[in-house]
Every structure is written in C-alpha cells, then in structure tokens.
Length: 233
Image 1 (cartoon, rainbow, N blue to C red):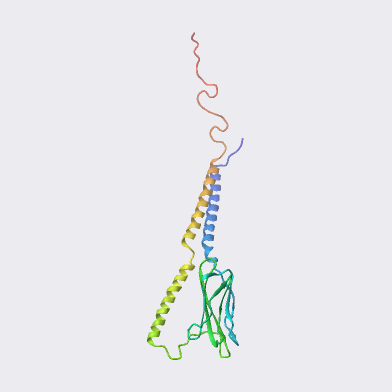
Image 2 (cartoon, rainbow, N blue to C red; image 1 turned 180 degrees about the vertical axis):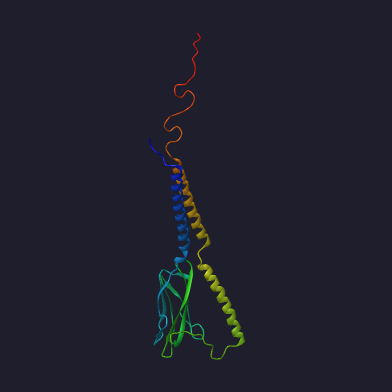
C-alpha cells in the first residue's frame, strides 16, 4: 500500500515554495529598479587633468568617458577666474571622447565646465580646474571683475543662480530612474510569482489515493448488485 503525504506536510512544503517564489520576485523587482541608475557613463580621464598647472596653454580640452557619448546636448565651456567664458572651439564628440579647442594666450587659473549626454540618454556634468603659467595655482576661484560689479550685474547674477538651481533640479529629476520602467519590473515580478504559486497549488492537488483510485466505480449494482429477479412465468 502506497502512503501519501499528510495534509500538514503538504502545507509546509507549499509554504516553503511560496516563500521562495516571493523572495525571488522581490529581488527581481529591486534589480530592475536599480538597473537604470547604474547605467550612467563615467569620466575616465581628461586633458588637462584636475588641478594641473601647465607652462603653456593646451591645444584642447579632451574628456574620455566609459561609454559612447551622445553628441546632441554635449558641451564644453572654459571660464576664467572672473567667470567669463573663454573663446573655445566647437565641442566635438567622437565615441567616448569629447573635445574643444583652446586659444593659445591663456594665463592664470581656469575651470572646464562640461555637460554631456550619457549613452543611456541621461545628462551628466562636472568641472575640472587647471592653471597656465607661473602665477597659476591650479585651483579656480571666482573673483569680481577689475572694474567692480554694480548692483544691476549682481541682480543678473542672482537671477542666473536661480536658473542654475532650477536646471540642477531638472537634472536630478532626469537622473532618477524612470517611474514607468520601475513599475514594469514590479508588475513582471508579481506575474512571475503568481504563475509559480498557481503551478505549486495545481501540483499539490494531484495527490494519489483520491476517490475511485483503487476500487473503481461505486454505486448500486456496481459489484454484483442486490436486485431480485422476477420468477413469474
């Protein structure tokens, strides 16, 4: 006689399988949500290097990233210690390299302000300080213009700072993982968990020893019957 698992044993087994399926679904959801945030390219190197002091001005600013940069929206700007932009060449994107030509008459401390579009479509940005000449320190510090700054210019700078803050907020929102993508991963994970649970429940219901498994059909007259015969002629 073949023994069958008890209801309690089947219940414990079902609970363990369901718990494993739920854990797998949760891990899948977290992995999907974290994937977009880990996809941004990184700056691997630059010419000039951060804090570098050169005797003469470099021919160009060259940035090298970990992935191919999208040309649209990528820009390199170089400013002097007054915060005024230097007349640099057009920003050029070639695969993972982004460059811009520099004038040859640079002297003092400068800051490279770069903003590129990563291969995943999200904008990334940063700054690099460098110096040219014996008086340079390689550390960029903003200084007021020699003729002084009037109230009107100060107000304009304040407005510019507000715009920069708004842009920074937009960048932070753009860098955040896409809400629809996260929701899609979560829904997919829940669907997988639901399918696993359905298969487990179906499997546990297929247990041997059910009605009619060994004795065949039952009912009146199934094993010889007990009816009477009519002996009347």
